[in-house]
Image 1: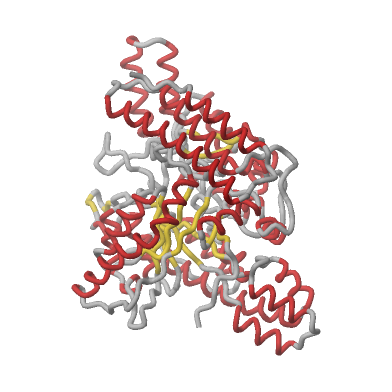
Image 2: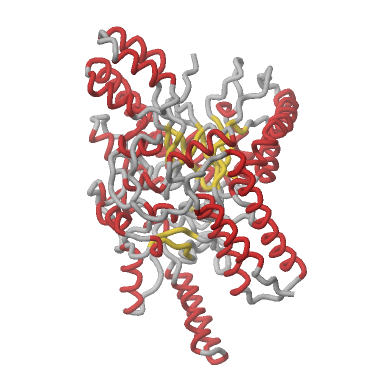
Length: 597
């Protein structure tokens, strides 16, 4: 019997290591979370840490072993599965014998949950241990141990200056590590389509249905709009592969890298998915059926399940319920707020305190990422402080010990990271050669574009090392953290139980301030994004660029009209009298934005 998920929220991947061990921390409560599996070094260190903690023996895998990256990932995921199952069995035993523990767990379940109603009924009847055990065996299951691969992080690798086969590329090796694990869970593919990587999925039987139509390993695509979902879903379906979930993320009101849409707001994107979900299923199913027949794989008698989930900027139970009910969403991602939950995420004390103290103006969209994609972060991180201290001594760039983002081939066929000292030294020499032909202001601006890049490979994992007091090799680089701007409205460390009860509306942990509605917050970000893009544009003005801005502006205005009708019809957010006024204010601001001719 396939048991229903206990919760209608999940914890998305955060950075390279903020959720590196989240399943070990929360899966026994039925909460699903996502591990990044790009960095095999932090994975190996955490594997050794937990194998020692749980007396699982020496599992070390040397980087001299052939295919060590994939083997490290497989070993870690198998170990996480072992620990989660052991903790889940111990948890079931605890709540079957301890009424207080059972009551606390029941309080963490959704108010609409049949399991919660059943447990409450049991608690009211002075139950026996046997009756509780019988119920929880039938209805409880641990949360998913899902994994994330950022498809762009797929650098070629070399040995003795000779390129290795494509299967040893970073993302390919990560995928192989997951595919060879014993997990029955999902891989979340984010940051757009990588056809070569998508083709590699065909090499593993676990991604195809078995004789009973069951997928042992599932594919989740993180997408920003319906068109992208349709294109990617059909691309995979032609290979006989099924996308089990489309995970929609706000383009700007999110953590980590931000991929802005063409002014399409989250609500309008979700509406298109709601209306066209069956089209998505039919299109992919026909293509999949033909591919399975050609490959002589097991056929499917009916379309496998497709889930639509969403994440980005959710902060109240009302917003959570609105998404579930209005758009038939199966699960809502709560990411950044969980950075303030020590029981759930791997964050060092100094960084967590910084997040607690930071205000709205401290969260910003930066140019830190070597990928050249806007990156959400917060002012005052230890990485920022260390970089500025180095700059005072005329020291720039990172030693680039990991090279996961060494993707620029501008100066080397093997690739360089734009945050590396090697790359920045070359850029400085070029800049100095051109210095006589530019003003001091232009020179400083060009210099800043070179130096503002941060070493994410190190900065995004250091917090996990520091929390567990693990040694950090190499130069001191501090912590980079990537919360979404929504975290500005959460101002204290909370327990897992408190956070979950907040999600379900049984507790409030938000600061007493004027937090804007999630849709209003995203709208404002898009308005600011358009204004900034027009203001800072310095290239040759083309008809295509003008058309792009006009489309962006029109999409924003149409989105405002959609929200006005939707909120009026559904009655949601009716207690917030500011929303109508804020929509109108933004309409006026957008109308006054002049598109260059």
